[in-house]
Length: 158
Image 1 (tube, helix red, strand yellow):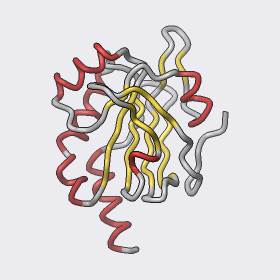
Image 2 (cartoon, rainbow, N blue to C red):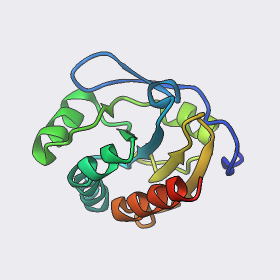
Image 3 (tube, helix red, strand yellow):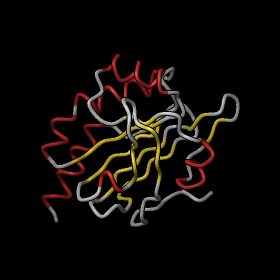
């Protein structure tokens, strides 16, 4: 599967959301800059650190009109516990189909156990990819402060 490149439209993805409802991408982010965080699972310390950092940065991101969503293959109970543990203040999707997400986004998949490797995107308000970060293993992902600086730069130079 080919990776998404800057300027390409983000593919349609739907995953159930913790607490009910559905996260529909890129539609739920339309009209705003968006951050999509595909994380390995609640067991991953690097993912926990990233998600907690984005939750802490959410006010600064919201001031810039940035919406954040995250998703993984974890089941709803595991995902809900992660949301509670880190007091995540953005939508978190659960029970994602690793093969379907990988086919549409180009994310790397771990075979046994089956999960998605960390894959992150910054989307423009029109749903096109601005930044794509692909990791084939445990490390390598978007940093919240970098996203704040990047969106601030884009807005100042629009």
